Picture 1 (cartoon, helix red, strand yellow):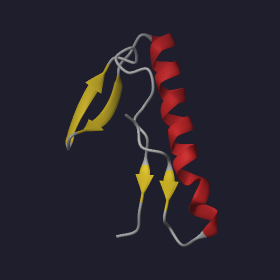
Picture 2 (cartoon, helix red, strand yellow):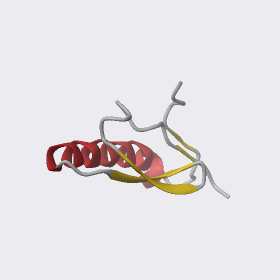
Picture 3 (cartoon, one colour):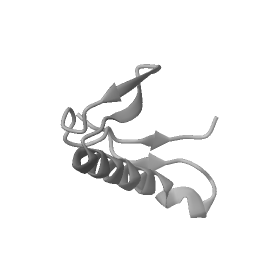
Picture 4 (spheres, one colour):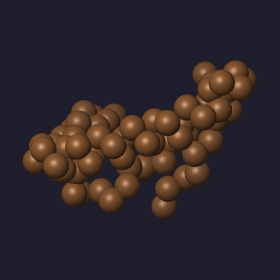
Length: 66
């Protein structure tokens, strides 16, 4: 189950950053699917190549301050 997109960053301009990152991830998968290539992702701390068909939707993003 995907967690909702949230940003706890204090800067108001950054509130939409998680949604923009998710749109970019979806677009990257669309382009990779058309090109017949894989998508490089960080999964469980490891860099892996996935088929764009492996996942219908990229995982939800949660952005927090350190």
